[in-house]
Structures are given as structure tokens and as C-alpha cells.
Image (cartoon, rainbow, N blue to C red; front, side, top):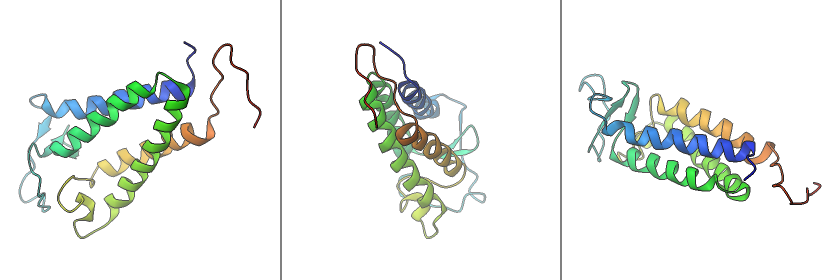
Length: 150
């Protein structure tokens, strides 16, 4: 297999999200929020806390991050699927970034998943990188494949 920047990005992004989804299950990495410091009431408060003390997470975040991570690792096997993954990740991250800035419980998807706090810079960074690898970086052709002119 010939490695491309798109496939490497997809694998690394998938690995990062997989680790971010699994880390809340490690004792001591998820800190419980102080009631006075966190006025947001989540409808889904199962496994709610702050990962590394900064990223608000609950079970919905955990499952979503694990799913995004596993899909990224699987999508890294092929240039075509890595581009599709980067494009879907860009749209998802951009939507979550915008929602993370909105008031009236929209920044928590009406209590389902916290998108506020340090999750906003995480999603913004993901959106910027995934935009580059989805639309700017042209994939290198695999060995034996003709390079198509654009």
C-alpha cells in the first residue's frame, strides 16, 4: 500500500477521536463538574464530566467519538474512502462548531450532547484540518494507477 497524506490524516484523526472516546472510561481522566460552575443541565447526564478537566463529555460524546474514530481508522485503507471520511468529518465538525456557539441549550443539542467549552476549539481545529485534506490536498495516485489531470 502506498501512503498518502489523505490516508495518514484519516488514520490519525480516527485514532485521536477513538482515544478521546475511550479516555473518559479511564478512572481519573473524567472530572465531575462542580454544580455552581456548570449551570447547564443535560438531559443525558450519564457519564457526564470534563475529560482532562477541560472537554465536557457525556456518554453520547463518548459513543460518537468512538464511532468517528473507528470509521476513520477503517476509512484510511483507501484514498477514496479517506477523502469521503474527511468531507463528512468537515461537515460534522463545522456544524458542531457553529452549534457550540449558540445559546438556549442549542450548544448542548437540547441536553443530549455537550458541544460547548473546549469542544468548540476541538471541532474547529478538526474542521480546518479535514477541509484541507478533503478538498485542497490532492491524493497521490496509488502505484500502478494513472494520474488523472484535473
